[in-house]
Length: 122
Image 1 (cartoon, rainbow, N blue to C red):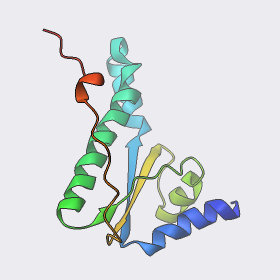
Image 2: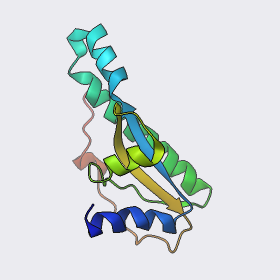
Image 3: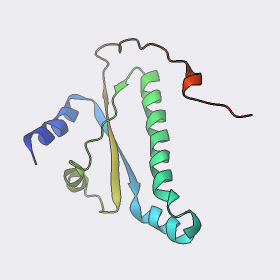
Image 4: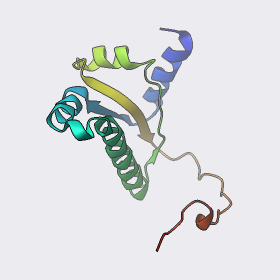
């Protein structure tokens, strides 16, 4: 493992913990086999479900006064994480969310007119 990659894993130690997000490849493949018409969608839906979960947990932590960040060090750390937690090969690591204290509030962002990105069709 490269030094940079090792430093990324070590940086998680500074937090109170890290949430690891996975999907089970065997479950996705089982759904693909059971519903072949939608087979191409199941990996996409697995990632979308994970994204919704990530947002929910991040928001919940924030409400409790706990800071978090979403990281994507995979596939660089996949093997090490799998070994560390004795996980099966079919667990696909999607993201990592180190959490802990809040060092400071984020800088304010300029509000964007949502109508520039979201269109409602009637």
